[in-house]
Length: 249
Ligand SMILES: Nc1nc2c(c(=O)[nH]1)N[C@H]1C(S)=C(S)[C@@H](COP(=O)(O)O)O[C@H]1N2
Ligand SMILES: [Mo]
Image (cartoon, rainbow, N blue to C red; front, side):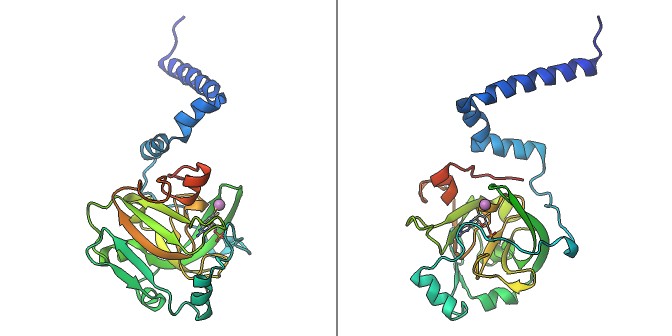
């Protein structure tokens, strides 16, 4: 019997899939192959362009309620103090591997060029919401701070401590940092960001899952390694729950 090339490749693919499925049944193998950050990053890079845009929606698609998840109010003394004055005394610190460290007020951020985008937020817990975000492209801030070409990651430090004493934080690489839809958002659905959704400022990194969208931003630190930060996995959920550092969608 002569098999056409297509049939042959088709059946090879089927065999490989079955093989993979069987392997995946074994949790250990699954962890090594599919949970490893390297595999995920490799798969994302080779299957899709990481600079491609996330889908943008129309105003009619906006969810009536953008539910809050995780911390809904940091409730620390420091946060209450900045909240009481409507964040007039809050500053976003930009530090680490930059030529010019910054300390930016909300008024200064409002004065910079904005970007607006209506995107879908997907949480690993199984819910999604479409919202309209307004904020400053992160690259604008990085250019102003003269980011070092040796910096590999940005670490986002948040005001909430998750009740555990470990502050929420997360990190992204420079591909996402300079992605055109990566913004520091101060408004959701044409209103100032609510406390529940991360006031006064949060990250939107639209090609990744919900837990990468750091709320209650206090500082951004440019680093060349994540090993000295937290438990070294690049984020709160990465450190304490084993979530993947790269959560591409
Ligand atoms: N600082 C901080 N950022 C956070 C969280 C949090 O608890 N604290 N939760 C994350 C998770 S899991 C999700 S799904 C989104 C939820 O954003 P929302 O509350 O605006 O829906 O924020 C992410 N960023
Ligand atoms: Mo989430």
